[in-house]
Length: 358
Image 1 (cartoon, rainbow, N blue to C red):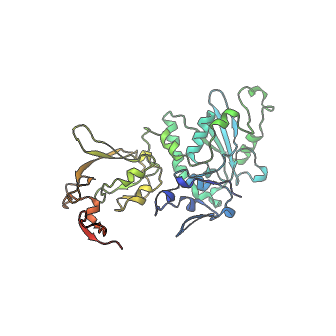
Image 2: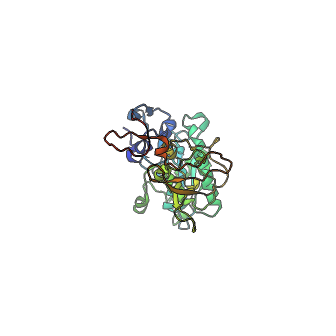
Image 3: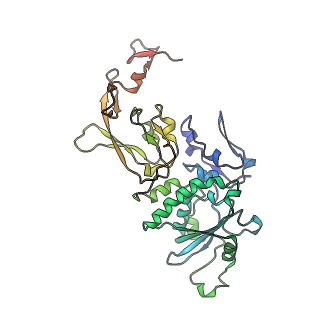
């Protein structure tokens, strides 16, 4: 029986009908997750708890019990966390630190564990990912880790990563305090976390929100990104209301622009959940061709003009049109532009009843 825990309230498919996220489906090498017309389906019998779907879940709706690491610590925060994959070290020879696939240990979650245990290094023994059916998950993992490494280069307490051969790992795993008595005061092998570490331990998850919080202000390239087409945007602001990390948000305008607001786009805070694209009915938000940009994130602030609809009087926002756009600036809210429904129980209709309900 699978140990996978599902928090349905965090899943994007629970938050909005028609969400296009297939992260767990694409990540699963055994077909335990499937997308059907009725929604997501999980086959417990096909799941081997590899954790790849957990690392791929942007909103952390999926979690697994945290693996027990082989940990060596030092008071000066120079210790390490060691882990191995099933290809590098077969399960029968596994010890603490064994994981079905290291790509299930999301970079944000690894950084979080290193920070909680006050260690600076992560040592991992891997097999040949090219020969492993789980190896296709490496693209996004390496992209996330490159940003973590960049943060470490800027002096942040991010861990360093060292990949070693299986035989090096086995020598590390077999070393004990008794075989290295002169370092007994500095190193120790933990078969189980201490009480203090248990208090700070968290289940295995993608930890994307924790990661972007640690990277705040680092000037890094976006880990995930959406692109706004201003000519399509109706400024309904549904995306800003749904965004779980405020990568898209509405803020007060600068002084002197009373009544107006700003539509703020901060891709440094994007976790790639896709909720904004799912709710956008004008297809103004898309994933950039070729994936996320390699350049540092740029905070964008677009002024929102607030006005009242000439038909129904409802306040609404508009983005300023480009100077080259010959289309007139409408004075109707989005509902009146598309035609309000005929309300058969009223003698006086609101706005312009342009169509009847199906």
